[in-house]
Length: 130
Image: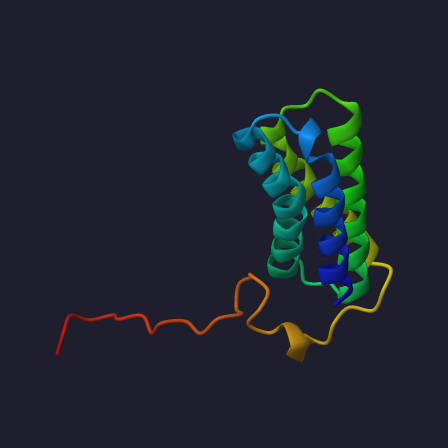
């Protein structure tokens, strides 16, 4: 709920500064990078990191949005890099912050985190068809 509230607030703020975003193509790509980058970081953090947890992921999201807002407002970095910057910062800070909190129980992440042994294996056929 809080993430939804945060993204809603970000969209409202963007509505007030849209005149500074350039052409329609540029503005849409900037908005997608600002919102999509940290969101992709949250998804990948949950899929690829075993110790990822709610508080750590939320801290990573806040850091990703904050760093991305700084990059957008103070640097001349092209808008095509916004999603990657937001994603990487969210994943890195979220992973580090998740180490400060208790990891989720193994039963909660079984089948959700991409790692060897998490999904059922297909039986290996050693002989030809019967």
